Length: 467
Image (tube, rainbow, N blue to C red; front, side, top):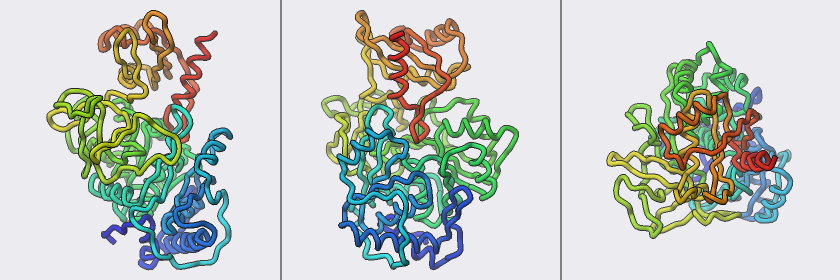
């Protein structure tokens, strides 16, 4: 079963024939065998083919459940596009997405369908999935993916992380977030066992790891922190690979994670919904402080200026990515900072490369602020703040200021002494990059993917400053 099929889900019947009773999907206490999964997907694909045209979009709105996974695969193998909605969207978001994409069908619950064989597969370049950005800075954008881009991403997961059909893979977050959906779909496509949850809860996640012998885990730093807090004094030796995407995490969290998962190799990666894997920090190489790793297998990186000229090593500019894993287009919404040229794509992230090929992120083009004539990337200031004692999370925003143009304001989760905090910032940041105000916030708003909800946090900043 080592050869990759060029279509997402095309291997499900062969996997079922080889081991029909082997568990394929676990969702909390609910399980599906390989045979059950293949049968459900085949029947549902035939049902979709009788009600929609090839290439049409099918809105999947059920949230985390085996039904969502089955419907996703049914769309893929039948040549339809799975539009994976986030059930937590407010009504105006949902209405805007519906109006923009006009799905041919909306599935909240699955119909009862008879078994059916898989039909002729679509072309590898056919689109199969529309996911949505987390919505941290506004209305979600829909990004469209083709089969080939994810199949090639699966090859990177195998080469860089060693994920194989022998693994039990846990992706504990919401499947509306591409990280967790990718983890579940990749596992099932290659014949590994996929473990998911209807809703992330750290104690239940640890029980699933112990009960099913989870060997590979996709997680964000926030989820890891919650697992560490829930698993104090415990250890789970079955985990051999921990794959982390998201913000950099604190050194003390790493030590606690290593105690919780004593046999796990820890790999961090930088990527994006539009780009897939970009850079990977491997556990078996010394990664310089501040770097996010080197280019993933099959990825070429360029740093370019505003005119599109390649910059030399060490100079900062826009990060341009070349690979076969890039998305097709935005299905809805727009992003002026996302541009293509000569087979490369940028989404507006800025950074630099060193002589060894390590990538350092500076921040997002769309979040860049200009204060006192200085370009400031909030991500840089956030990383400094989050690394200080007592600070668990930080988010930095700009508010209008008649003198400086923009005044920096930091929202912080944790306990801190403001004079000591300012002194620590002065030791590592220019004066113009030190926030003028600090706002404490314990109830941290999050997106469905577990990331900080920047839009909600910025609204809190403006509301507080009006008082």
